[in-house]
Length: 215
Ligand code: MD3
Ligand code: FE
Image (cartoon, rainbow, N blue to C red; front, side, top):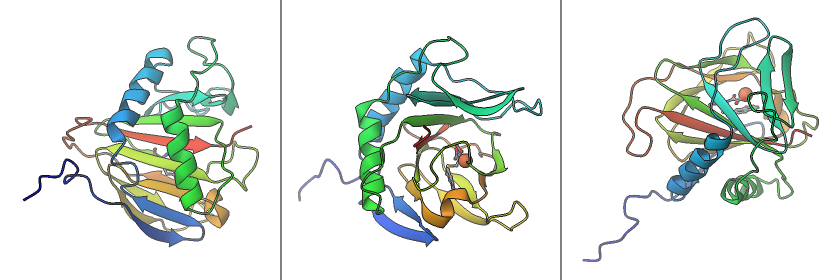
């Protein structure tokens, strides 16, 4: 019998979603510990915070950014900016391990030239959710968005081109990476309320990374 160090890490597989969206199941599993280390380093410089929407609601997910551009929301609106409003300093650089993962996933999905200049880190604790929305604060919609799920599982909602289109439910687990390009790029999407779960690497929490070409 051979005891293999990696017996507990699943091999990735591809699940086409539709219209340019591909789920790379478990694509990030093997390097998840290193990704989580990088998230901790970034959030020591740019703390996770619950931002306010222009409508005055506090978002339930806590967010931080790295890279040249960071996404922010406040009473004035949604936008990308080069400084963190909490510290007035530039956002931390995008760690190489994060950039490399995003580029490999995009290439695998048919986008060999993806150069992300923004990474948004969302942290969900039990009870947190994200309502249906579109990501349209970026400049070039021909560039995909790459998302990485770490920690507790959640149900993702994949809607249509209108908010009223009934969304399809897609479970996302630790290590799953999704590349959203082509016609899926402007689809409405969100996640249902995170349920309590105890993940060996993150405890009750779920992190989602989204890599974007913002500028
Ligand atoms: C489909 N985040 O940060 S990731 C977001 O789980 C966001 O934190 C969710 O929506 C999360 O904007 C969902 C999956 C995702 C991200 C961006 C998309 C799906 C997308 C952009 C276009 C279409
Ligand atoms: Fe989004």
